[in-house]
Length: 257
Image (cartoon, rainbow, N blue to C red):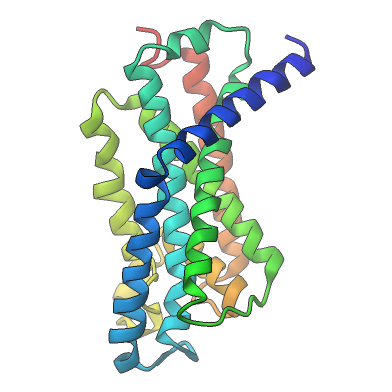
């Protein structure tokens, strides 16, 4: 295929992915908006007023960046894992694989669909947060860079999950038992400065801590960890995940047998 034909194929997959989650917006966009609104009300307004300040900010200001990033990560991941596993389940993934499209075109088509949903939900949650607090973004470039890089990384992770999933239970195992606990323990609701030294050191092994704090640094200008370290980690994991996805596609692992 020529570059022009590859572009047509790529843009077709992206449009199909975007239309898919927009068509079922009551399942993809509305639930995270309602869930995050409840978080804002319960943790930010009702409980947060009794907690006081954290990291030099009100509790509402402190938790908003973490909740936005949590919604971006979970929705980017969920979109790709559900869409690509759906292609396997409905048996049209074989048609995609035998087409003259390159593996990179296929992979980036699904990944950008996940990025679009992650960023879309992130924008919705950000707008909702403005009803509860003011957001004065300190470092816009860092904010945009970390949210885009994180959504790409977790879209790739969702693709890997979809490749190895054999049924719908396998699709939900990783988000339920790995992604959600790591996100909740990644400093979304608290600063690791509050933890005893041992548990603070344990928390530093959690990659979510670096992602959440890098985004919080972009919004509020404060972080519990090094921002440069966070970018290096996200960039490194993204490169490794992309290489592994391309390897799986080239081998046809769990796709061609």
